[in-house]
Length: 87
Image (cartoon, rainbow, N blue to C red):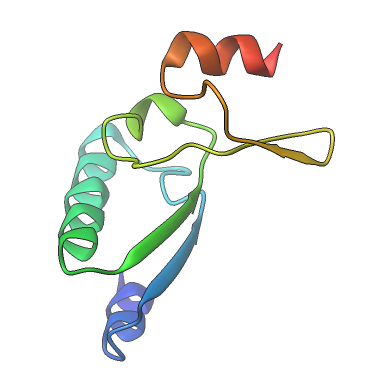
């Protein structure tokens, strides 16, 4: 959290998070989601790379998938569509 606080001091327009929920308990994951929501509400664009997709579906404005080196954006609005994409 200290590194996040340091990054926010400069009021960035964009933040990139790589697996922010890795190794966290459900309680701490919820806390991180709350912080991310506040950052988002303040106008910062967030790019989040995360394997725990279910936790971000209600949070994300857009889901982009990466498969075999190609980016995909179509039909990734629901968990079922994401599962089909991953298979």
